[in-house]
Image (cartoon, rainbow, N blue to C red; front, side, top):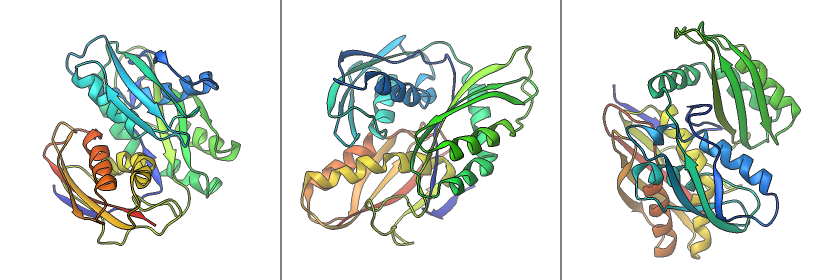
Length: 312
């Protein structure tokens, strides 16, 4: 079924991976001069969003070069010549990391993981995420990531939920209760599975695209048409917002830039072009680079996206 939906979001639901599917990331070169444990924790949350990167027959380890700005925006490139490394770099490129400015190389190690089961559980959690989304009301202006650990039992019940964020006890408690109350379909087996989930709240009034503090894009400024649903595309775009906004520092242009691109069935992007420009090549080239690095969920067919970013 094809969909065409205007973009608007206050909530991001990142990809799901079994705990243990990805070993804890290791900073193998460089790194922050302070807050290293906090940085490593943030990298671990980012790694939990990389389950899609380890499909097929990836190498045991991949290395990604990162440069973190003072505001947490990340520029990342794959060091290892492998699709998994490119995918991991794409995830980091839309992430925000603490401790900046710093640069270095991060190594991610993959282990065997039941990807089909991971995808099934992710789909179910997305479908039943209304109660988690509603937790924004506990802290309407809070914006940022929430890390969630849980144990999913063969009958679909969820226990041992642990939530960590910097958004406040009320929101964390609400998320914990919402996840614990969620019941998934039974998957069989004889033992529970530990899972990690990364969720991000954008705060009341935030929107996909636009500049920080500026108005949301016009209704006709953003669109999705194709095989992926808005709830599959929107999380990646919303997570990329800090990097897209940071492109404004590359030049002095003002106004709205609309970029259009196609998401392949495998989740990578192609045909990234600027359709509405502001006459600032540096800013526009930066936006194109960010969109080229994104990785989306896989789909049955290609999806075309139009995405506005405003610079004031």
